Length: 351
Image 1: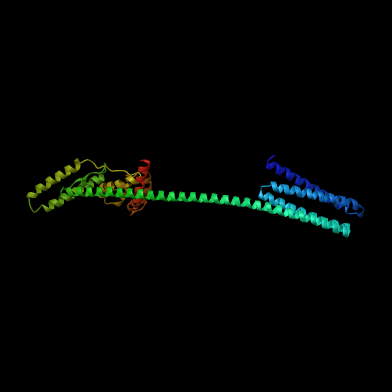
Image 2: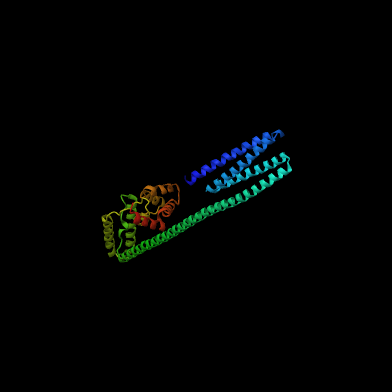
């Protein structure tokens, strides 16, 4: 028989003895109504004392086998209540007997028994209480160790997260530095080419837009105005007139023979923002003076989400173009957004 089965058996014996005690109490209460039942009352009281001793023995065995501190405390509280009931009933029995000497002898005897049993019970109770306290302390120590282990694991995770964040910031800073370095190199190269071509009279500024009649007309007007200025400056000498007309013819022929510039479109990718804006400024903004017309071209060459974000700017009468440019810059042209887009392309691949 294992410890759990032994505990259940001892608890059953304890319960049976307690119920027998209750039955004897009730029977004695009935018999003590009449003095004629004195002999029967004495006999029943002797049985009550024996049954109480059996109950106490079963209680101690049950405590020895109990391992749950909560059940242990409940059993002790129940035993204290039963002991109190027995003591009170014994006092009532002694009064009922009205025999001082016998009552005194009985009381002395019961006191000795009670003293011995109380001492034994007190020792057993203290032992069980100490065992229960030890079990509680062991549980608390185990919980504390688990809590400390979880705290260490949490701190390690936080340190790893902080290190990963710092590394990510370092990678972003390096990538941003490389992007701006490439941009600076491109600007330097463009500046150098412009310096080489500074003496070329009238270059691609007269290129036409994609089948756009207004921009073509504007380019022609610019050519004519430049030639008129050249011609006005050459009126001082009759021989320079022929040269001016030859230059006019050459310039017009060059403007119409050059290939049409490629106008880029923008669909909302931050990596394409700078290229699109520079292309738009070169081919449209520098040649068109009306802001409403600039806004119309800007909406035309935007697609998808970028186009949807600036379409309502046409409702603004005066500053619609400025507002549209500001929206595009705030949504797609900020440096940290462009750098992050380049990082995502490097890490996850172009999408």
